[in-house]
Amino acid sequence: MLTSQQAEALMTASAAALDLHLFAEHKPGVVHYLVLASGMADLVMGQALGIEDESGAVFEPVAPRGPAA
Image 1 (tube, rainbow, N blue to C red):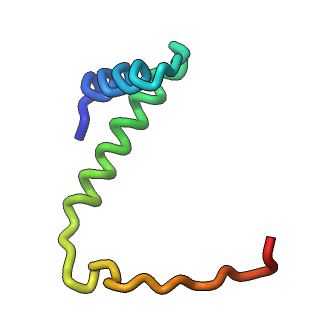
Image 2 (tube, helix red, strand yellow):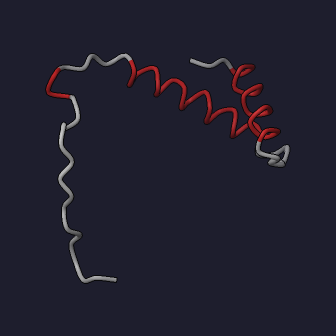
C-alpha cells in the first residue's frame, strides 16, 4: 500500500506529466483516494486464482439489448 508521501509524489508527478493543474484544496482528497485505491489493489492482487477464474479462450459477441440507437 502506498504511504501518504508516496501517493503525494505520484499525484505530483502524474499531474505534471499530464499538464494538469490541481487546486490546493483538492490535493488532500486525491492523496487520500490514491492511498485507498492502493489498499484495494493489494486486497485484489492478494486473492488466489484458480483455473475456473481464467477468461474464456474464445470471444463470442452478444447482441445488445433494447432498440438500436
